[in-house]
Length: 485
Image (tube, one colour):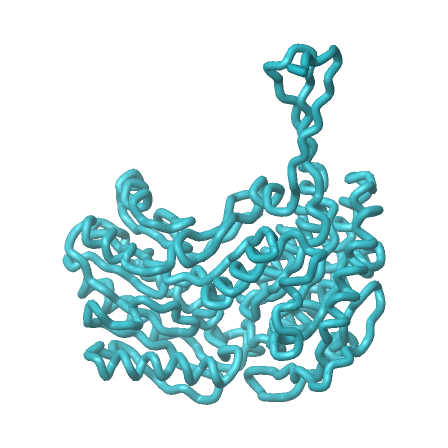
């Protein structure tokens, strides 16, 4: 596929070039096992070159009329629209995304580019009154300078674009380090899109590398003022610690262990549909996925029967087949790790309600019930097609169980009484929660982020403006101040 032969390179200061590291990242199709490309890793020196290029280019870009800046994002959107089929094929090849998943990711990506057009004009200043006679207080909202971005493998195009495009729109330079499993879709593909859209050279740089080569150099480098990281809470904690020691701001979008709550008056057929999508979209490799389905005991039997039946009907297989609903996990290591967690849970007393096989990266969906209250699997983020069905007695226990996790990203409540659902939702310790819907949602103007171990900060809309700009106070004394000496 041309994308992989053309884009398996570093993109630094407007130049496509090989890295100079001593080893290669091998880009593999998780379903077929075929090698798509190899990328020689970037070194610490090349990370420095990328940041210095962004720093140089950013000053002129920040001074560019925002109406001119927004034209880049209009052109980028047209490029994505014109190449949807090619991009869909790349998503399928590099990360095993089904046609449904690719369409979902592309829709989100296009929405973010549309939002970025507006963000170009959203860095608004303010005038504030002063208690000092004759003084005028001006607040200027300015770009932070350069943003370092570390993106994940599960929705690499969208989750890279979600930070890269707004940061650029607000006048910043960017250095992007995509996940090593998705270096093209999550990294160099964005560079190609923006290069063709006319983004000035040097503003966006993509370094394909790994901590084994560069250590913490990407975070510690003196140029970036903000580090935006999307990934696991374990790595996020390290990123936050290193960044804080260098007085850098962070935006951390981390893992989740979301609960979808089915109250006793819920529409069970609808709740089943929502729960199946919320758990098994992209093989469960979604931070907002419903790891746990909490069901009122009075409707547990009926719900579980329907839920298991619908889950059993899902088609597992080749993501290139339009009928496939569950494709491969990102790599065999991930599939083996999830399978081992299921084995441990069953050995500890969980009941298997549905389970098939694990073959390489393909894993049939698993539904577990009757979990011991202290089962470790209840506390973990499950990045695979595994779901836990947990009964409860009444709203108070539902809230307690939903909150019994170190994470707090998303969630959902199903009920016939919307206001009842809102009251329950308000008691859940999570950054986002949805009444009578799924747990997976992201909209370009609504603050996105989590509580507890699920992250720090918010993105989208005004939250993105806050994340990638800084406020400068300039006062003007039109009269004369009185000084005490």
